[in-house]
Image (cartoon, rainbow, N blue to C red; front, side, top):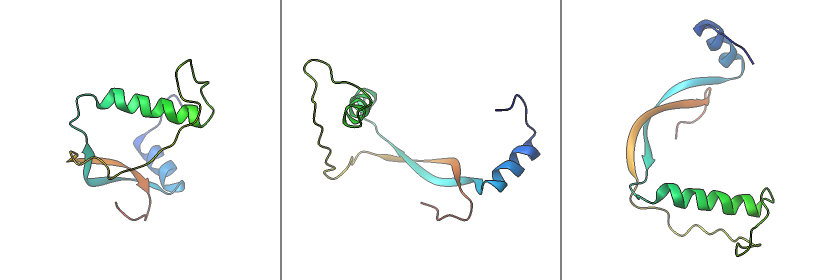
Length: 90
């Protein structure tokens, strides 16, 4: 952990770790107004499945996860992210 680092110091550190900052063409986000609540519920169920959380009264003790077809209302947005240096862009 560092208190301060220069741009050049960060660039060198990231290069040594094989990471670079790359521009993405797009990313997708949901237009569902209940997305945050649904996401929190799914993450909570994963935590139960992984044994990180003890199920409360009325919550499942066994969790099955199945991906049907995926959300169809995702809209692409331009952006940037960290990626492995020399990796395939997705």
